[in-house]
Amino acid sequence: MTFLDPLINGLSLGSLYALIAVGYTVVYGIVQLINFAHGEIFMVGAFGALSTWIVLGQASANLSWWMLPLMLVGGMVVGVTVAVLMERFAYRPLRHAPRLAPLITAIGISVFLQEFVRLFYGAIPGFPDAKAAVVFPQIEFFTGPAIEFGGAVIQRATFFTLGALAVSWAFLWFFVNKTKIGRAMLATSQDPDTARLMGIDVNRIITIAFAVGAALAAIAGTAHGLRYGNIDFKMGFLAGLKAFTAAVLGGIGNINGAVVGGLVLGVVESLATVYVPGQFGGAAWKDVWAFVLLIIVLVFRPQGIMGAKVVDRA
Amino acid sequence: MLEVKDLVVAYGKVRAVKGISFRVPQGQVVSLLGTNGAGKTTTLRTISGLLRPESGEVWFEGQRIDRVPAHKVVQLGLAHSPEGRRIFPRLSVEDNLMLGAFARKDAAGIAKDLQRVFALFEILKERRSQPAGTFSGGEQQMLAIGRAMMSRPRLLMLDEPSMGLSPLMMQKIMGTIAELQSEGVTILLVEQNAAAALELSDHAYVLEVGNITLDGTGRQLLDDDRVKRAYLGES
Image (cartoon, rainbow over all chains, first blue to last red; front, side, top):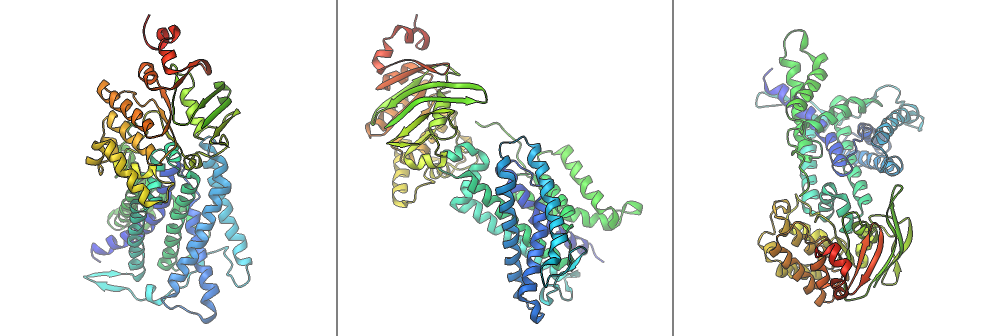
């Protein structure tokens, strides 16, 4: 095993964190709300992708490569729908409530979504019981035998995950910086009242922020299914916590920060598993090292790796 | 053009505006004068839809707008350049100006208005791609006025446009307001610099702790003893 293997594994894991972290950071940037139910969007996105395959592909056991785009779309539709409903009916009525209210609501939504999937997913005719882990379809083209590349052994799912992050990041950059709606999002994040005076419907911008974050989380959910071969109703908890860590690590509110934070967190976790010697090494301690990194960054650079110091408005 | 009737605005239980009425006729410059806390900014924020009044009515061009959300008010032709300029500091000058035209769809008209703003404030054209947060107070004020003009308003509300500016810059801003008026834009002006505002105003209202205590033409108020003592610093 070379140094490259854990590094690439870490980048792959980090891409998953990054895709989820963007959702935390985009929503926080616009409404200063930490949507702790975002991990559950990642989870329902994965189940949405699985459902798409069950409905469209299972009959013929279809595992062709082109099933994946359909599954991604299905996952995104489910994830975005749940996120938009959650914003509309749970968070919007609390827009001017004390900060603790939406936080507690988020925990409630998390529990609700987990339990809903656990109890009712299997009740839909033809769908597997979701009280334990559910097998995720393994699509040969994306999950087949690992590829050897320059001395490193790379899982095929890794290519998919890294590619998904690269494409999503490019799309996001274009959307935020080059479209009218994107500029309206930037304006709203800098000064919501003044944005309204420009004719920007801030509620619509908030909905779009939730939708964009959910789409990326659903992609991550699908990638998680390909990477690990199964999904379960509580997969959103730790993944969401790690992605939140990544968002804070990179500088909450900063999209590039979320991506960098996710990748750094994934790599640190992966390298710590391999290189930390003795009883503190190994997979059992990887979560500990991830949060130790968070603490170190918060002590020495509280605004995160890429976050700007908050300055007063001129 | 704009009519405010018995407007009451409260923050929680504290009434900042206690039942004021005034009118802004088409083509005129109307000023609201008063000290800090008199309720001037609250009044403007209520007209533009950022605040909901407790009671009273706001009418703009025959339409009642006191329940219309802020992002729709600007589409009716009423622009508000807020107190403290409130430009978007991390966006470029040009992006700031284009956001002023956010609700508009006529690309040709927007391009024309952008050139008009650039003609009015040359510095904005020279530094169009710089982040607006790097500008001086006066330059930011030009940007804020230019941004409000980009919605092509029929009524422009300016909140403290001269605040924190050098005398020279203040003269330039006041000149701009006169120029806008000569182009047919109706203006509702809030100013602490009462002398400069009254020089420009067709009509002015004096606000004291939420009530209108005095009104008249700009000339009348300039000559009024109470105004002279309280706002013009003469004894």
